[in-house]
Image (cartoon, rainbow, N blue to C red):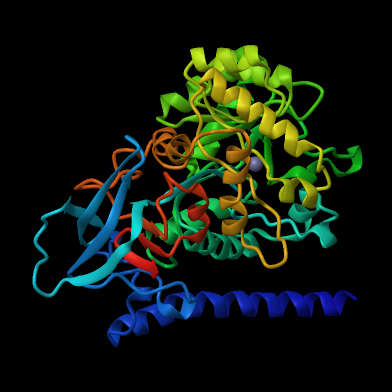
Length: 455
Ligand SMILES: [Zn+2]
């Protein structure tokens, strides 16, 4: 046994060395021979030339020069207005001009979307791209998923899930933890540096929680929640956990308020919020129970995630304190897949009440499960069904899935709108989603940062 073990160690070391050789030597060789730009991680994404190559099957690199989109209709989700016969001129990664009489420069690539409706790329404000529960293997429980899948595997999974989100029209996501040992930071940086194509990611790093996180451990195996959660019960631990996350690449702080019998108090949450805000990050608070949501609403977090058991009073309090609700209203299909079909109507009822009360809402899904014939993108966009069931009108759904989310994520100066100077994150649908919101399930064209990834 021992000999075999040491042989294994040698093989592992050899494999690691080979992997290192491949990742350093091959890109250098490719650059020298002027080969594919996909290895050129030195190139700034601003140059627009480092989109994923077709070997990923997700599209083509950004064309050099200028792209002109001839749009039959352009929807502005902010105002809920539609403009006909617009031309959108894209230069590199950004929108240069938009209007009915924009001149198309000679040599520009022309994309004919004259029969389609064009709108900004969609947002999912609650994803877990680096964790996919395999229902049969994991008994539907992500505790087992985290025990079985390595961080390296989960980073690769994140690449595939990110590409799936793009294909469904989601060009920006907020990825709220459960990524092992910072696979989400690796994914975000890999996309930003052009190694792979994916949505813009605002990632949370490791979820901060009271002792136990979202798991129920046993005393002989206390460490099995590492690295999935950072336990932080005292103020010192909270401050350190926030700072550790920021140091290792988190762009938002995610806490779990209430998955144990002991929960964060409003004062605890205020402390965490101040620590995050001091570094320019927002605070997202997972709240499942009524007391948890109450404390988070009282503390004025940036967003309450789920809010499954929120009362009308707490929805009012959230509204008063400027909290955005990312309600993750699970579809019937998802609640059935997770073994809790009764939950769907509770989600829809809460969404209905939240809309009536007028709390600010951003679209978020919490999809983290592999279902046959589906991707995380196809499952995510189906969440609009819950919104329709709750009676939310199409213009408000469209705002939640674009501009509201852009503001919550803090990227609204860059994304979420089709205006000159904004990033060219553009999608098209066969019909006008203001008239038929279901058309969002049939996104026919996707441009991400000026690169066409679906057409
Ligand atoms: Zn979640």
